[in-house]
Length: 141
Image (cartoon, rainbow, N blue to C red; front, side, top):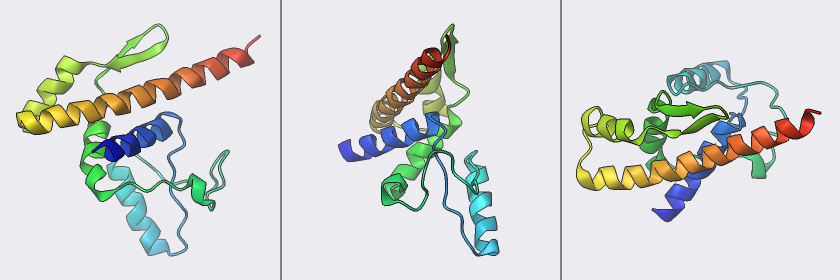
């Protein structure tokens, strides 16, 4: 479970940094299926990645099959962020908990584990956004 949380935190960090991309596929039919699948998760493929070399192994991110469900939940929670003067402050946890219990019909055991994983993902995303703000502030005179 610890490795899965670490992997999902890495995914949330890439997502928050706008670095989550897919490889271009030569087969047009396959690419169409890939585009449809990505669109279902609110993602899109790009032809020329910014600031990344798509073919290098260190820039390839593989989502484990056991993490797909949690990633889907993460994507569906994106309207539940609390925002302040500096941007997003964190997820609205009472709303998240209620939504998981009712919309996802999650039991107590799964709920506790999922909440813990989502908190790790939230921290990774918030850290990525904080780094982006610091870089932006450093650029402005």
